[in-house]
Structure formats: C-alpha cells, structure tokens
Image (cartoon, rainbow over all chains, first blue to last red; front, side, top):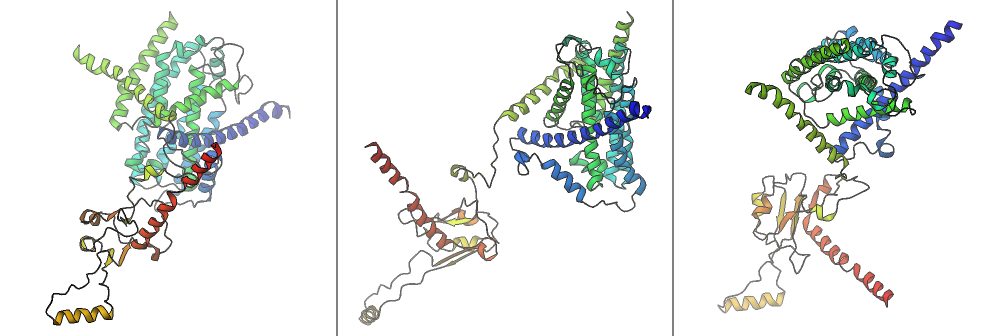
Length: 324
Length: 196
C-alpha cells in the first residue's frame, strides 16, 4: 500500500496530467496555428464556431471522430493501424520527465534527456510504417524523405544536447534547470549561443515543420506518409505532430532558457516554463508562415554541411573549455 | 580566399534575409484585417465598382428608365453562348383616320411617311445560366448600352430566376434612384430647423 501511495499514485497522476496537458496543447495550438496563419495573411482565420472561432478545434476533433476509418486495398492491415498508435503513445511518455516546477515534475529520472531523445525517435519508425504499409507511392516517398530527414537532423540535435550535458555533467532535466537558477545570465543560451541556434534549426527538422516539412509537402506528395489515413488515424498523426512540437519547445526552454526559473530570482514557477514554451511555439508558427519549403537536397546540405560541423566544433570547444 | 568567402562567409551574411522575412510577416500580422465577415458586414459600394457581375442595360442619361439600346442586335449576333434575346419594337399601328389619309396621299402619288418603329427594344431577356461573362456583348455594343453590373449579393433559387428581364431591371433601378437621392433632404431641413 505504501509503495502504491509513494510511487505508483504520483506516476498515475502524472500520466493523467500529461494526457490532459497534451490534449489542451493540441487544441490550443491547432487553433493558434490557424489564427496565426490567418492574421499573417490579413484574414480572420476560423471565426464562426464559438467566440472568434475558439470552439473550432473541438468541432474538428468531433468531425474526425465521426468519420469512417478506411483501410486501403492491399494495405498491411496490422502495420497500417499500428503506426498511428505508435506515433501517439510515446508523446505521452515524453511529457513525464519535463520539469514544470520543483514539484510539478511528472517523473524525475536522471536520464530524462536520453529518454526524451530515444522515445521521440519512435516517431520516425511510426512514419515509415505508415508510409510503407499504406500501399501508396506518395506514402512511401514521404516516409523515405521523413526517415532520411529524421536521421540527419537527430545528429546535430544530439550533439548540441551533448554539449549541454558536458557543461552540466548530468542528463537530468531537473538538475539542468536548477543549474540555471539565479539571474538571467546563468541561462545556457548565453553560454552556448551557437548550440541554441543549431538546436532551434534541428528542432524544425526533427518535428517535420515548415520550412523542413518535406515529409508532408502538400504540393508535391499531397500529404506524404499519412495520405491514406482517414478520421482519427489522421487525427493521431496530427495530434502527435503538435505534441512533439510542444515537447521539443519544452526541452529547448529547459536546456537553454532556464526552465521554470525567471530572469531574476524569486519569481520562479511553472508560469515561466509555460510562457517560454509557448513563446517558442509561437516562433515556430511564425517561421512556418514566413518561409517557403526548402528543396530536399538543400535540406540535407544545411544539415550535413552546416549544422553537423558547427555542432561538432561547438562540442569540441565545450569539451576543451570544460577540461581547462 | 575567394572560395572561402563565397561558400562560408556569404551564406552566413545571407542569413540576415531570414530576419527580413520574419519582419515582413510580423508587420502584416499586426496590421488590421482586409477581409469582410460577409453576413454581418458588407463591402462599401465604392469597392463594388471593380466587381463584374452579370450583364445589365445602361439607361439614357435623361431618361434612366429606357435603355440607350438601339436594337441593332450586335450583342445577340456576337454572343458566343447565345444567352441574349432581343425583340425589336413594331411600328405603332396607325389609327383608321390616319390610314385613310395615307391611302389617299398614296393614290395622289405623294410620298408617304410611314411611322417608324421606335429604336429601343420591346424585350431584352438575358439567360445568366448560359452566360460566361466574356464581355463580348459589351465590347460590341455601338450605343454603349451594356455593362457588367455590380450586383454582388444576387441569389437565385431556381433556373427560372436566372433568366432576367433586363428592361424590367432597368426600370426598377430607375425607380430606386430618385427615391434614394432626395432622402437626405428632409434630414437637412430638420437639422436646419433645429438650428433655427
């Protein structure tokens, strides 16, 4: 009984909390994305359902739930329906180790960073399963693109994360946050500015967001790997995309922007964490509606010729300075 | 050294354009919206002048209820979709006395002036279901009696309604216009009275 109260109950609460937080974020950011796109193009975006269209994502969700789940002819049935589940489940897990406050941490594990990076790679597998099993040439093309992109962008992402771990000597997100306590100059963005820039760029590549959304590329591949999915099959990919975006933005704000610590001591709390994450999310939306999609060779050139050497140089420099 | 500059320095400097792009979209994000929430708001009439709706007749400047049309049939012959039907007016039938007088004059060997048919058409039917809004009728009208309307809010619920009697429409427009014009006058006088 005591084991249950001490270990399992907090974890259950954390899982339920993560589910709720994921749901809220998905609804919020689907709405914000459409509003943002609208206002950048000087139109109102969704407006009719609810005040200023605020209930639109809910209605869209209901619509998706009400639709028929179609399996295409000759599709691999098992893999086809495993893929959306496989992209959705890891997202829940990713929310657990993110520290929103000294108490508001679902699961304080000392390998939190490794856990997040490992499980976010599940998305790549889910994408290739979805593309492969749906028996569609656009799907396979989208999946192939997604995988080569995910593999490429994971490396600079890991190298920048490694630079932070070299500095702090830990992989625990709570410890990394606590090392940035105090005034704003303690934030790692000022100690690792290059790593921050590389992380931001790799973040776009890793979450398949524009301008690096080659895997979906509406104008070329219709929708890429999820072209055959209907109803909630598509909904799962859609939710997971926003889920991964929020996770990456949370990790970015923990690693570089001080997590739940404010710019001056004494005001720490979850509001800083949420504020920083949401600011980064807004930046991602802003970027999406500003830049055109890059070509695939350009995408890989940016990674192999720029991000990777820079990240390696940054890592070596960090190691050298830490040794001295 | 030149290669290093071209391949390494220049791309880094070019990254500035990313911020320029963000500034552009950021600026537009803060600007007011340009679209209109249709059922609750409507477009100003001055913005409707550029809208090319269905074809309509143009009235004479002094008599807005009758069209400038001279029933020459240029629009009907040139229409590629055959959506216009124009019927010419017949000459007015002379009264029995006039007829007798004309006959008498003819017998006497005089030249008789027969009454001419009025130029403006008796019927001007326009089938909007067939029209492709190409504007050929407007270009070919020698009397400049046709133009695109700015009837943007027009709704038809059946095919019959899409067949418009343009003469009736012109008459309606002519009736509406004087009704709309003197409207501000009573207000002005009321304001003047108040001042007094």
